[in-house]
Length: 340
Image (tube, rainbow, N blue to C red; front, top):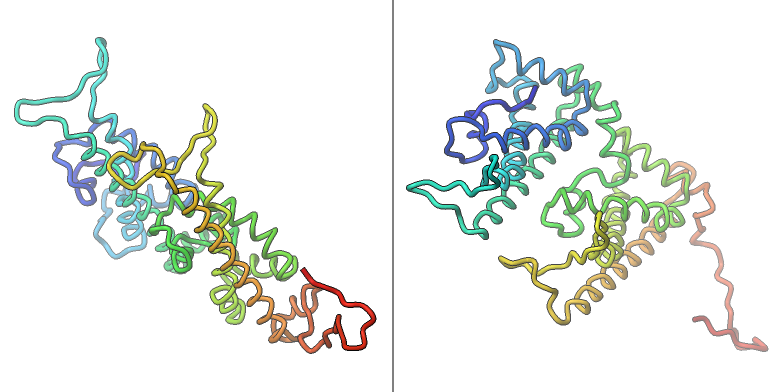
């Protein structure tokens, strides 16, 4: 059973002139629920919400946790389903082939209009998914079902790395609040956590931060460290590494160039000089990330002690800032050494 069933429910989130949900859109809503929503809710919470929604006395406008959650769920499902189903809704299939749907008073919209509307719906739907997760986080103590969700695999899936949501990443690098971009950057972020942050923080301190993020138990010192140094470094490094990596997409047919101009025909080839612009953006992000990492190391070395950032203090990554620096070249040195 779907969590959005009627045209009146769909109209609350999508302007649509129809007496019933069109078949192509109804199928897309079911697919969006299975592919996008179920992984966020988990089977237990989704079953609970479905039972509440199917109850004869259910009031979708009530202030109860189930009704509040359902409104956000239906907003995301309605927009995603309509956006995905729009292509199929434009045509009809019968025994003689595929036909455009036309009428005496209406004609099919121009392709650019269809594409813009579809992209708008999909962006709104993806933002709706972010709103569902944020609502669950904000209200995780409101009922036993929500508390169970918070400690379930579904409730911790988005907390398996230091960045947990689109909005946090957006604070440090502009990705237009895109959940799709945030998700696409996930493999790069997780790789950089291990390869770039790991040596700076030490494996034990990195594990401590990850565990506290997963358990929603960050200490005030660790939260300040994340937001002041770790998040900015990781966001900049991610963009620097992702600019060339995400310019290519692997699919079933091979490798596609995914760089396009922002206009009504994004299939155009990249402008001349775009490679230089991308290279500059990547290099600037990498340099910014490296500076943040140096500041992170300096801050931890100055402030770490047996009682503050103790895991880092007791690791090999810690360097006592008061350690005398060995002078390489002195006036009486028989030879001089040059550092590259």
